[in-house]
Length: 229
Image (cartoon, rainbow, N blue to C red; front, side, top):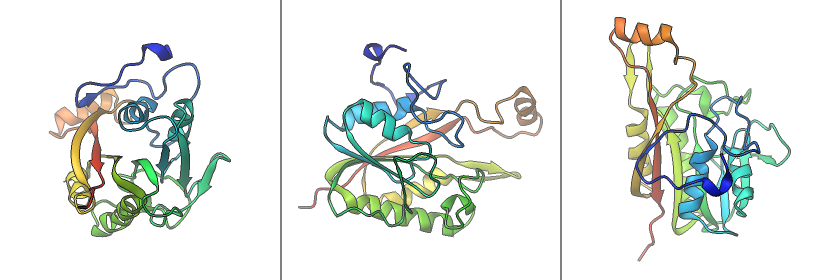
């Protein structure tokens, strides 16, 4: 994909078959739970300008860092699992930045304990989304994001539901309720899922035979920090 042909998405359904765009890597497409780079590109094009400070509290393989730098934004990426030197080791529940300091935050958080993100016992991804504790801990991260964001500025949060062992958990809706305590809703984007391990003929046949649905999308919640009167 040629950079000058990239277009900002105009609907609430985003479908990116590849993790990357262009000729340069943005993060590592082999990393567990990696975010499609074009998701971040779209958000930064809409809600930031050159020179703005972008923060990703769970930046994984650094996709947000690479996209932000390419777009001439300042960027800080934190994670518990350090895979490259420009990522700062930090727990998202206590972000070492001052209040009302950041122009945009992006986060692709764990959806449950389905993916091994790190060996760190403090990792929220070690908690099942079937437990209230999972949402309690992610709410601590949400509170920190609200604290560091400037009033009126925007954050994007990616999360997905879970169906496992014949039980559905509406992770997105449950997390949305927590986020509304801190942010004003702007929109919900549906991100089409690709390349997950269940996207095979065997699993599609099982879904039909045993009457369940494979996860076909993730949520991208777009929310704004209120401007207090």
